[in-house]
Amino acid sequence: MVKVLIHGCNGRMGQMVTGLIREDEQAEVVAGVDTFTATENTYPVFENIQLCDVKPDVVIDFSNAAAVEGLLDYCTANQVPVVLCTTGLSKEQLGKVQETSGETAVLKSANMSMGINLLLKMLKDAARILAPAGYDIELVERHHNQKLDAPSGTAMALADSMNDALNHEYTYVYDRSQVRRKRDKKEMGISAVRGGTIVGDHEVIFAGPDEVIEFKHTAYSRSVFGKGAVEAAKFLAGKPAGMYDMSDVIQL
Ligand SMILES: NC(=O)C1=CN([C@@H]2O[C@H](COP(=O)(O)OP(=O)(O)OC[C@H]3O[C@@H](n4cnc5c(N)ncnc54)[C@H](OP(=O)(O)O)[C@@H]3O)[C@@H](O)[C@H]2O)C=CC1
Ligand SMILES: O=C(O)C1=N[C@H](C(=O)O)C[C@H](O)C1
Image (cartoon, rainbow, N blue to C red; front, top):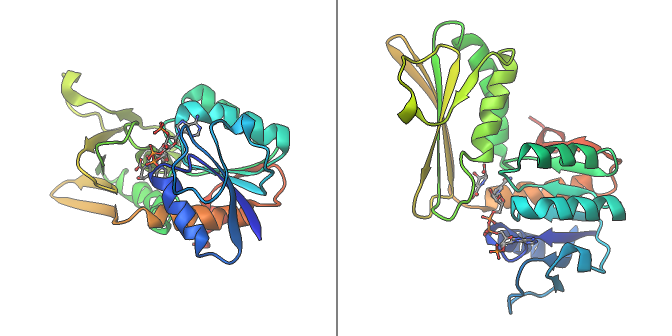
């Protein structure tokens, strides 16, 4: 049985993961950490990771960028692998993630769904073929009105994956309202929409001469992220220090 600690256990994703693990015969939640204790919690919940006296086999984190540094310190000090799903990390925080992977196993992914992880792979081929043929690349993401970060971690990962395939020659444009020039060939526009309860939509548009090709992923439920996170946790428990991602978990 894999013992899981959920960091951010009372949030939207923390509650989804709690429900999924309840149905899973290979994993159990042994503790949670959040800023408050909800009455429905069936496991001990600590207000701060440093106060947690239960030793898990692995942590699943869906919390807040500001909470990640403390979590990484805990994982290093206690040699606990961590599945890091929180998005919107700063450059410094990303540096600390990298450092931590020298001490314990870290699996970081902005999107745990099968669909987006397949898209990350497919877009490399599409970009390699379409960009040199003169297609402009634009991304549009849509999320619910409670989301803190923009653009989404997934939109950034999709852009980075295409840029990797294009020798990192592309720059990102997030806001065209101040741009007073024609579109540069080697830029990717990244636009964010926030509203209602949209779980997560990502669209990648290749706009060429007289034709447009679009790739779109829609998450209809947070379960697609939750299921991926639980599989990632079962995969990561007991693994040696290092940096992992969802391509290590999902065979594509
Ligand atoms: N990788 C992926 O597939 C996915 C990633 N995400 C990312 O996961 C993160 C969480 O998303 P979501 O569940 O929707 O957000 P929520 O705001 O619903 O949940 C986050 C929870 O973490 C809590 N929290 C805040 N600070 C701390 C802390 N110091 N220690 C422990 N818990 C803390 C919050 O409490 P409080 O409300 O008091 O701040 C809240 O209960 C976001 O960054 C989101 O982008 C989301 C979905 C999928
Ligand atoms: O905050 C969310 O809800 C989501 N965040 C992730 C992101 O920023 O990419 C993944 C998913 O789209 C939902």
